[in-house]
Length: 303
Image (tube, one colour):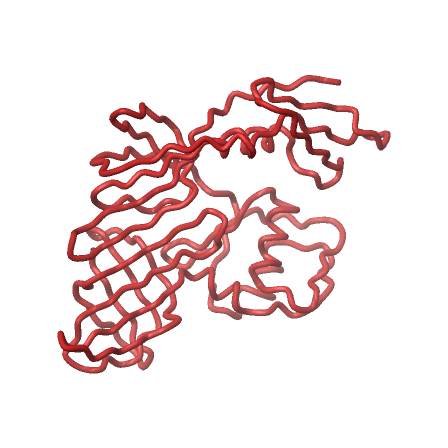
C-alpha cells in the first residue's frame, strides 16, 4: 500500500510506510474509516486528506478527522484518523426546506455542490410531489432518503469523490490464504412470512420462506413498506455468518460477494460482505471479513 497526504496549505506529501494501519468497512455505515500510524522525523504540517493506493489502484480516499503526534522512546509518530468522503455529508446539516418536484439535480445544487462534490451520477428524472427537509437532518440523511424513496437505490461516494445514486454495482471476489474462520448460525434472524397490504387496506398477500425453523412474521404497507421478497432474502442470508481472516489485502468491499473455501467448514459461494477490516502491522497484512452465508432461494405464495 502507498499513502499520500494532501497538505492543508497546498501540495502533497508521501507519508511512507505505516507501522500500523487499520481500514474498516461496515455495510450499514456510510463512511469507511482509516487509522494509520507513521514514523516521522519531525512534526508534520497539517494534512487535510489522505489517499491510499494498492499497486496504483485507489483503495481509500478521505478527510482527516484527527492528526495526533506522539513522542516515545522509539521516536516521533504521527497518527491519522480519517473517514471516507461520505463523512462530509454526515457532518453537514441540510438547510430546512420544502423542495417541490425534487430531482437529483436540485438535491445536488442545494446540498452537495456547496460541500465540494462536483458531480452526482444517477437518474435525471424530476419527481412528483414535495420533499421536506426537516431541521437537524444531515445532508446524508436527505440524499439517502431521496435515493431510497424516489430511485430505490443507496448512495455512495467513489475514490474520485463522485457521488453515485444509480445503485451499488455488485462485484465478485475470490478469497484465499485463509488463516482462521468461524461459522455462526443465527436462526433468530430468519423470517417465516411477510404480509403485504393490498389496495383494499387489508394485509392479504403472503410471501413465505418454507424453510424457516420457526414462525416470525412482518407486515408491510402498500405505499412504503419495501419489497417482501427482498426482506425474506435478506433475513435468510443474515441467518448464517462466516467470519474469515485471510493473509493479504482484499478491497474494496462495498457491493462485494465472496467465494471462499475453508478447510473443515466447507465451500462458500456468492456470500455478501457485511463487514471487513484490513490490518497492517509488524506481522504483515491481513483482512478479516464477515460474510453472510445464507442462500437466496425464497418461495412465495398468494394467501
